[in-house]
Amino acid sequence: MDQQYISEPVSPAGQYLNSSVLSISIINVWEAKEPIDDSQAVWQLGTHFLPISPRFSSIMVTGKHGKKRWKRVQVVPEEHVKVPVFPTGLTPNLYDEHLENYISEIAMEPFPQSRPLWEIHIFKYPTSNAAGNWIFKLHHSLGDGFSLMGALLSCLKRADDPSLSPTLPSVGLNARRRDIENQRNSLLSTVSKFFSLASNTISDIFESIKKSTLIKDDQSPIWSGNDGVEFSPFTTTTITFSLHDIKQIKLRLNVTINDVITGIIFLGSRLYTEEVSKGKSNKTDPTALVLLNTRMIRSYKSVQEMLRPNTNAPWGNLFAFLHVPFPKLSDTNISSEPLEFIRETHKTIKRKRRSAAVYFMGCFYEIIRKVRGHEAVAKLIYKTIKNSSMGISNIIGPVEQVAFENQIIKGMYFIVVGVPQSVSIGILSYNESLRLAVIAEKNFIDAQKFKASVVNAFKIMFKAACKNPP
Image 1 (cartoon, helix red, strand yellow):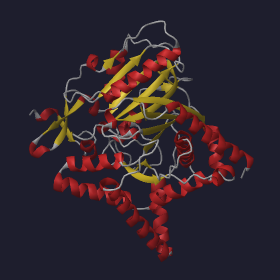
Image 2: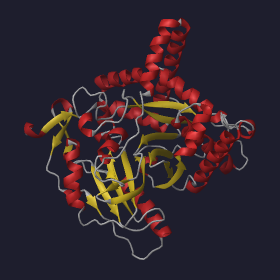
Image 3: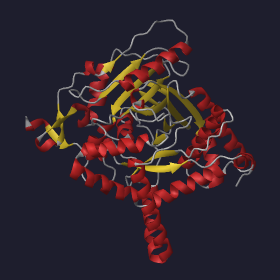
Image 4: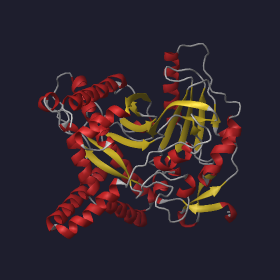
């Protein structure tokens, strides 16, 4: 093997996510305001995309003792840029269907391991939301949403001033870091809080291990439990909320935006379950896997900074799972105090953030990896995902409208595919809006009813927040 082209080793997380049992990708969609000119696509790829990170020019190879490393290869852009052809002159609604089916099809297609693990698809037909769509399919082993979104955003410029890069909101001190600092203070001041922290940590560790091995959610209208669901067709629907409206609920409750939108998703899921159950008893206790970024950061970093040694926001897969149970649904909390749904979600997420379980689970996976190999850990992660009803991940996007090669991007969203769940939701903020992208198991979940239920949940929450301002 030519060592000249071998770069860094593949991280353990990268190996888990590209294994015999797991192959997870992130699909990011940019909606164009004007028709897309794809004549320069290959040139743009070589100029803007490939230089971003060595990972985009590398493949996984197995070296001595089965250890995987990234090997630099010659990239043939034409193998990675796809321009599908459909009949011309159709209505936007029909092109919506073609786009949805196309995304489902490319999501199910495995990446050839002999090429770098990414593709760019250019859907040139007008849908009800855009004049055309850029579709980026990036394997999760290349990096998590934080890394890959940072890479894609480095290709963009502000629409109002192309000389400027997009403005990304400062996220302040990472909530995880604040919680750790609060824990340190509490340990010094109150012994009882120490025991509370220890109790929560132990409880969360056992819960995580049980979800990885023994316990799974009950079958419900949002979780089929079908084997191989990650290889099944799915439908995609998106929901757009005003970020201003979400912030009004946030201020009313003194919680985070993520708490608000997660609470809305939980309530919408409960409402959907009630509707499709048609009065039948459905006393399920579903849980969601909420992804937690474990970087200790104050703000987003450039790709160059992420690739530097000893940075506090490194490139890669740095995330953990939070098992968050859905709050109970009752006539009382809907009619009299619907905001309690968000408060309960906030309390649960806050408690789990303050638990040290995510770090203990990282150590647990590392021990399993050293004893039994990365495939054994991948199987545990697969079961952890499959045994939960829903996955929720979120990314912060640009504050203002952006453009790619002077082509304005009207909207954007992302989904995580290849996960063994009936419902997975990606949340992305962009240009004063919050976009939810929902992928739902086809012929099992009614995506339009689910969407309507989530929208209804937002209306209920927003009405309650405006009725009782802080």
